[in-house]
Length: 89
Image (cartoon, rainbow, N blue to C red; front, side, top):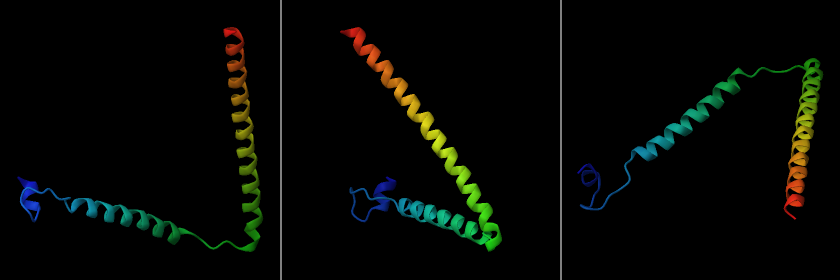
């Protein structure tokens, strides 16, 4: 009965306006968080850029190490697959 009250033509269901409102609220919350984050950013002087670069290098080494661990796991799985195929034939 509520769908018929919301629709302009009787018997034809329409989308409630709450979906559009939900989308608008989601965008407002997302952009509000972005604005708060950008407001909390501080200017970085040229002296501190070297420290940031060293942190990025250490993060890069961590990513590279994780890549090698993942690759090793993939090779182990491939080796197990080959053993399984050899046992079948």
